[in-house]
Image (cartoon, rainbow, N blue to C red; front, side):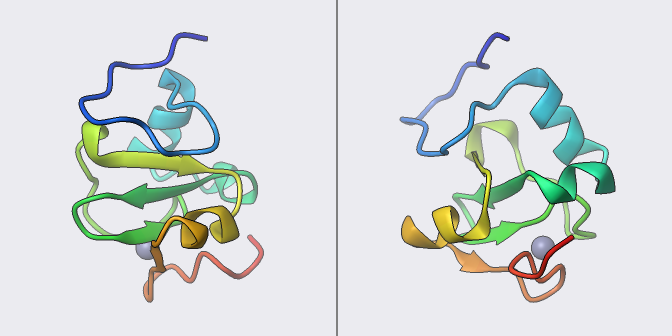
Length: 86
Ligand SMILES: [Zn+2]
């Protein structure tokens, strides 16, 4: 598992691995149970299957739960409702 290069200090609670990033990129609903991503530029946290536009990799923080994202100041997305169980 190699963590990807990140421009700003990474704040996520789980590593931004290629596997985890692919789950976000491909809107993998199977990852909804264990992964949430926050977009720094938007301040919004989503589940992987969210229909919103994909963020740039360098703007993403990954979390195991939405609570961890909210603790860092992210808001839960209104489209994918990441606070509800997958
Ligand atoms: Zn969303």
